Image (cartoon, rainbow over all chains, first blue to last red; front, side):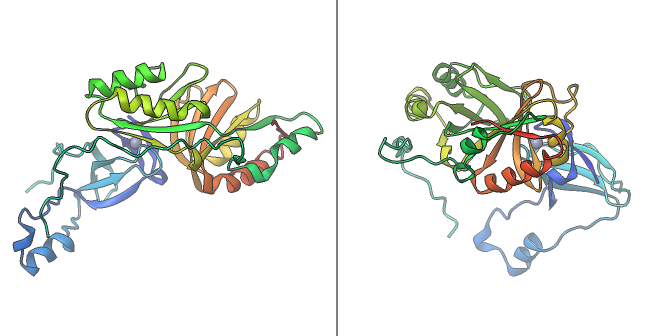
Length: 95
Length: 220
Ligand SMILES: [Zn+2]
């Protein structure tokens, strides 16, 4: 069970209140009408799935119902930081 | 296909309706079928948990940016209380209460016979991008009080209810008995649960079961 800090509610809550929405910082194609199938495929289906540091979106489902970003180590599950949508992570993978 | 669909000018006329039925139509709260008034009339003895439905109140959901001065001032002027900007807090002046839901969303609970007038006044007072929705029919408030009310809540939710973490006036939405509820501590031993209409019966049944060991007193 993860203990997650919601940056909007400004306190730690149990994982049960949240929903993970997958990898963060996925930019929608700027020119969608002229995307190739490969580009759409990359955007919609393909994810980094790293072993180690990952940036992911979480949704405070039963609380404030806001999205935010989490930097988490997928090996240890440790949450390194929490930051709002529109902000950039301070903790990033090496290399 | 991807052209932006935007109105040519800002839509300022919104259809609003008075949801308060006339005297000829019987208003039924989400727990109407539970006949709490009849249960209250035959309460046999005391108990550690006192339950009543704060029924048929006006529930207005307000959305807007805290940076919109017109929104913040308009809400304060019309409601008589300022929107609480500190997360997880509420204000209450006796007839109107406002619960913080998120940084741009609040729940104002007002007397039902004032809800329509308040909604219209808010629309008249506020400029810019905002939203007012009357959701009165969609949810209800269950009040739990008494020395064992907190024990019933501890069985029902994962929130930390210790006074140091959940002081009087605090509001938090969370999972509640596998459903969800907006929990507010309205007094040392008094709690309010805002529950959705479709879950009201389930939560009422849950609360009866969870409070059985302490004794449940139903108030009309
Ligand atoms: Zn939150």
